[in-house]
Amino acid sequence: MLKAWADTLRHPIAPPVVSHSMPVLMTAILLLNLLAATQDIATDGLAIEMLAPAERGLGNGLQVAGYRVGMIVGGGALLIFHDRLGWPRTFLAMAALTALATVPIAAAREPDRTPPTADRSRGRHFFRRPGAGRVLLLLAAYKAGDAFATGMLRPFLADAGLTLADIGWLLGTVGFVAGLLGALAGGALVNRIGRRSSLTVFGLVQAASVAGYAVLAVGKPGLGALYLLSAAEHFAGGMATAALFTCMMDWCSSDASATDYTVQASAVVIATAVAAAAAGFSAQALGYFGHFCLSTLFALGAVIAVRLLFPSPSVVQMLRAQPPEAVPCA
Image (tube, rainbow, N blue to C red; front, top):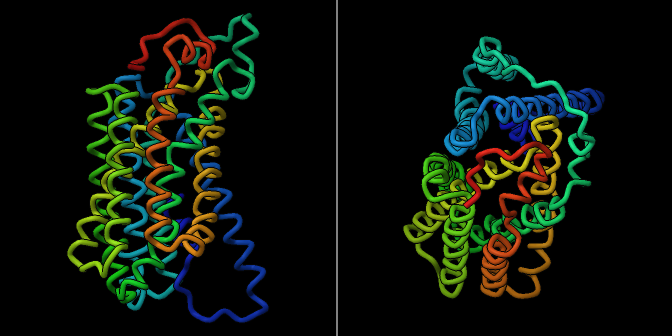
């Protein structure tokens, strides 16, 4: 949750700050995000070590859902109580909730580590392992189409006549709740239908929801249709994210799980950031309808990437750099 609350500080609702305190504030935000990212790496590494392959789907569903709960609490609920608490108490409440979240971690016990073998392949960095290139390409492609579409979602809603309050309810409440439910559903389904099938099915649903924005962009969309489509898009995004994170855990070596997962997560973050940044240029050149149509093609391309690039069980074993293990890759 610390990572989620740190994200809310990137778009804060803050009182006026005198100029001489700005360097202090910027330094504090930098340190907060640095600590949040470091904690996130350690959390992912511990989760990979503690969760068996069959438990990773539900585990990632809960992880994505927890992230969204953190966004709702940190970016919504605490701001509602800000008038009564004031800024110092609001930040103290965030700190208390963060401390509370560390109690289960303090009570947990890490699994015993197996001594490293003499096999040099176990010490290879993720980039140097066979099959790493196709995995990184798949990760970069999978969420880029959705990010390319949603990068222009707020301007689209504003131009459709929605007020700031409408957009807040649409994305901040309905969207987050739908995404939370989608993450839980995706995490529960990923083991039942398999990793590759999950990415394919959830990717198709995600592409369909993006295509819905193209349909609404033709005319003047009603508020009810926007609510329904936004809920569907966030639900699909939550399912797809839970499935993708589960696969990323499977593709980590047990000797360097935190590092391997961070490399993969960085590929996703960089790809989605580039796609979101390019969205403005696309919408300006093509208009909303053309932009969302192009986004749909990118989202469908991600599904094609899954079918072509998804690593086989043998490639997964090489990525993990260890003896064969029962990993559900179908």
